[in-house]
Image (cartoon, rainbow, N blue to C red; front, side, top):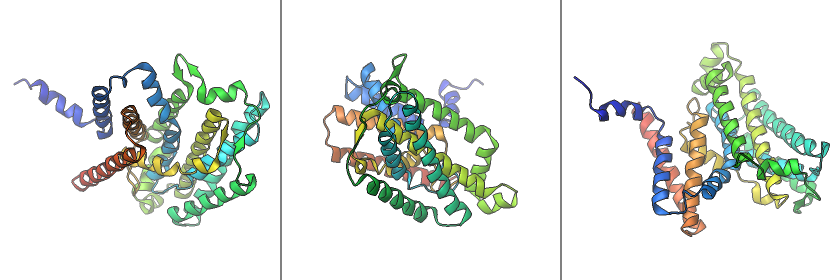
Amino acid sequence: MNQSPTRRWLPMIGAIPPIWLVLVAVVIMASLISGRFLSPSNIMTVLHQGVVTGVVALGMTVVLIGGHFDLSAGAVVMMAAVLALALGPTEGWGTILAVAVPLLSGTAVGITNGLIVCRAGANSIVATIAVQFIVTGAVLVAIGGQHVTAASISDGFWFLSNGRLGGIPAPVLLFGALTAALTILMGRTVFGRHLYAIGGDADAARRAGIPVVWRGVAAFGVSGTLAALAGVLIASRVGHLDPTGIAHYEFPALTAAVLGGTSLSGGLGRVSDTAAAILVIAVLVNVMTLLNISYSSQLLAQGLVLALAVAYYAHRRGNS
């Protein structure tokens, strides 16, 4: 007896991660609410808006899968943006240094977090908040609490956030490439399998011979590097900044990771689902902006979406 089309499709739909279904739903809803939403320029705006938070969220997801938190990410974003502009991203070596030094600094902060948490055994929330305060304080002391402005910015540095390739913003292409690379890293490599095992049960992973400490340090290193990259992108986009205004990216990034289904207790989550969650948030913010909804109401809506997502995933895992 042949199955009905509906019965044939239901298993396929059930295999799709919930956040992707939510993304389709909010896109349809947004297109019905506002006729301007599906315009090519607005779609590019939506994609562009979520990149900085998205890059931080990808690194946050890797750490969360390993069973830890990285709440220093916002401070690393700020540090990297300040370093990039302070170094003077002029032509040639100036541009290279303005990108390389912040990235290496972010990686160093991430590795430091990893050693404190995974080697010394400190609680990741407390340890990374402490590192956040240290990094933020050091940056503000170094610049005397002043705004930071680059005297000149090379075309190459400007292109990082403002250029286009084939009509698509360069940051969007970069975010897509990072999502693909990390999806392969976490899903197809020994490192990824080890990190899922550690997040699921660190003691069992240790008994199985998995290098728990160094896998954890590497995960924090990835998070620090990506947070620094987000800071470089901000510096490239604006050319000048108030450091205190960009020091809190860790919480929007954490929101995106949780909305995408990454478990706060470790061992569960996918980078691609975090990317979808970033798009969901970007679509919601964009359509509310098109409708001239106040910023406070936008925050309320995002909070409700996150609360519903947490409740849904908790219910789903409780029944699995």
